[in-house]
Amino acid sequence: MWHMRCGPWRYRVERGDPIQMGESRLFPVVRIWSWRRRRARIASQSLMAQGALMESIAPMAVVLERPGERRPVPILDLTRLLLWAIAGLCLAGTLAACRSLRLLSRSAGGEP
Image (cartoon, rainbow, N blue to C red):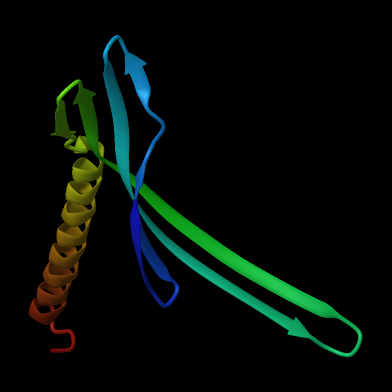
């Protein structure tokens, strides 16, 4: 459908193949974030090439098309939200543990 590019980062929205159900058709719509890095070097006796790719695919909506009607049905990706919440809790726990260890070392006569 459309895409945006900024250096090695690429953001695009793709529309999948239609699924026919009677007179209705369903089109899945996904958001794809990707990061790509490629490098090559040619020396006198050798050739070296390396690359890396990371992609994140998230569902956005399902477009429902009926005769005379076209309606997007948004999708809430609860798995992604749960993973971000767990990552936030882990970060908060790590920061709290570091802070409490620092306070304990101060009270025990350690460095300020």
